[in-house]
Length: 444
Image (cartoon, rainbow, N blue to C red; front, top):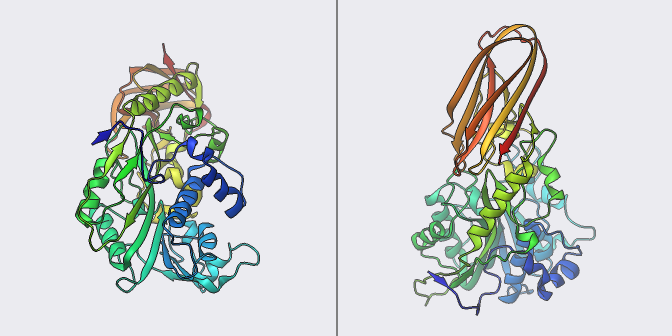
């Protein structure tokens, strides 16, 4: 499946890398089409490579009719629509959705909702907006010259839903039509199958393409250099005071959550009545996974070389318990009614986020102060790094505490596991707690 030669025909069917920002065409789109500066954010990368692929396949012209799937109110809608005869932006535009980007106010049309984000002096005559499910496209057969989606594919369901969408995209494209799709690319792990937020390994996507009988261009570039901006971001959301938005201060195009590295990828499908089933060749450096996992280990070592104070309640908050943590800025305030959350027992008064420690020896330190004698159960919780469920208590301590008390948990971490501390009172009467602090460090 792997090839080691350096020649590569499909320039923009690839994973997101920092080197792309050095490409003159890439820079031209950012500066002259988007009127932006490079942000080294993978969402900006997705918009640029979608635009470049549509441009390079001759679809951005005044004779083209196309559609965007899962479009929300993304700026690419406006950049593409002004280049074509018509663009139809589609999404599940309803008032009771988990996604803030598609959460239409009652009584407002989805068209007006999208145009709220349009740039000044935008000519809306080439834009149409429709509520539509990606699995059932309300277009005639062979009616579109192009379509695209920006990291919407992984949110539509499970295997059969992905297949159904690709079959629909193939149906609505005319002969020679192009579908450009960005989605999640997972390194060093098998596909994470969480409904509404899949992360794909290459082999899983191959099976989806085969089942849909719709194949992207024949070569995919998954090579990743050892450049600084390709090193995964540190996973620091468990720390006290850190938020998702603060990760902007750690520039990288690779995300790491619970020790699992991933980034964006782009695939280009072309409908051709004469096309045969294709074998998708993977260009990939044999050292990519080792490079990423070694940097994740280094991030753990640097972050936890000394005691770090943890947020004692992050796992009890909705943003700490949802599978969509990496999209928190796009979710509506009441998204917990629409996505799968993993509840914490109501008796818990503290529950840290799960932390990946690689295979280091680790220590949790718990500092508590109660005004009156209180019986507390403390648990060291373990689960898989790539599955939200399956939490198991691997150590527990029960202690009666009055005044200040320190408790420690020592353990050897496993590479495929993550760990958290949970605390709850065995007596459910009102807790009179004056201090709580939970810290973690590794022992080297």
